[in-house]
Length: 145
Image 1 (cartoon, helix red, strand yellow):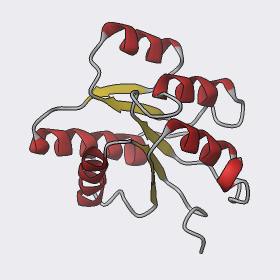
Image 2: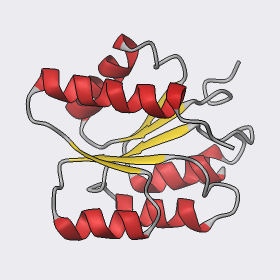
Image 3: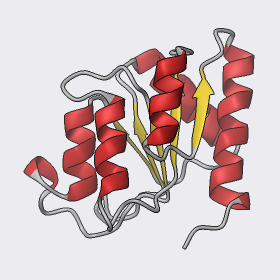
Image 4: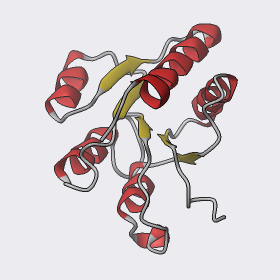
């Protein structure tokens, strides 16, 4: 099976250390069977909408997108805007997992349709616990169409 054929969680995070901590937390909660990590907003849009280097990817959307705001090439706010504006993708749960606690980022994210906004804790164990809980909720508890 192609590595992109079955994607449950799309992680869009440019910081390798934060990405590794997130994936470790998801593995700890047994939620990392089908996770794809991308490092910038342009790659995320290409992946989601099957364009550019991902044009041949099977038409299967992630069940959950974990999205950072401060990304290279295309920021997380723009990625969120594009996801929520498209009929094919607007029902995908998107959780902002970011270090930004700025009121304007939070407000803008919710105006655009983000499903949840999580500020990254600085301490590893707290960060790991927060990500694991978010993953458990969105992948196991929440029901999507």
